Length: 453
Image 1 (cartoon, rainbow, N blue to C red):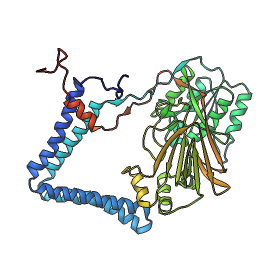
Image 2 (image 1 turned 30 degrees about the horizontal axis):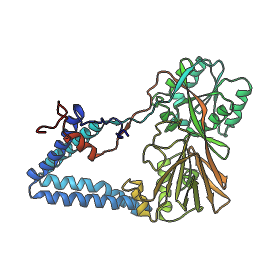
Image 3 (image 1 turned 180 degrees about the horizontal axis):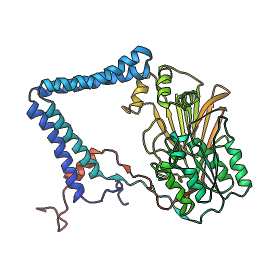
Image 4 (image 1 turned 90 degrees about the vertical axis):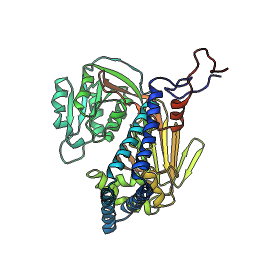
């Protein structure tokens, strides 16, 4: 049997540039420690105690900032700000600031060399694509309020109309029936549907496009543009997405389903879903999360959930995230990245913690206790209440229980520009054991024998 090797790792001993970078990483790391030992001298222990103490104070202040309200929260914020300032002041008085800065720079250099030596994880991010003729009657829905007004800023309506598209602009105070607009366009002969707006609107129209086997155009005019990012589209200039109308290719991607409603990113239950329900969430997500987080972390709130996936059952989690394709990162809010969107499998992340301290540790990525990950074709969410709040691609819904999430492989035909940035490569996690093998493994002898054998 052929031995298994990590992507980018050769079977034999390391050589060339990776070996040099790996050795440079260890040299810089040793240099960082040497600077402190030689130049700080007897003060090294003091520096260590000071650093550990500052980290402990910062961790405590972070905990109270996340889990408290009123004056205590703002006192905690003040401590967070003042702690590094106090440390820097003490270092200046001790004439050790330069040594700490130099050691920190060497440590950063060590990490940079280590990551370069290990290389970027060669996750397969290239989805098959095929040529696609320009549509004759494209229909686009544009939300001028989405993404801070990107539709107007990039003149998307005029540019799309110049390419022959019919544009429905979501104006006015009332909520527009987006699904009705898309279905009416299909009935009138539209041969492509598209959206310039948030992921919730993207998902709504994508479901109609998939049901009618029509191509779907994603225009990155939302706030976070998770779906567009995982498709490799240009997030800085949404007008480039319109190039797909003239010179595009087609991808076949999966589409999630939650009780008959399509989702392109994820469906969330528990803590995050309750946050999405807040009327203030859409206007100011960060402030709303900070306002509601103490109650969420401080104790149980909301329905008791039970999540089923395959043969696994997770009882009473505080949060469940079901995604259209598994995420590649450890982002608990579902804001990570997916290497591909055509694997035909759902991802499921559950969080079950026993205390607010443990929850803060998870949010700060200090540990993974209470976090579980699963993949599969179906997820069933049960609850002890007849209806529960659900966040579907950031949209607040209330759905009857039990709730079933499924995925349809290759259901959505996505039209993308031929010339686009593409999905950014995923960085390999730090692996010091492998780095040591790269740096210090022996080169093979030219004769194939070790010296002296």
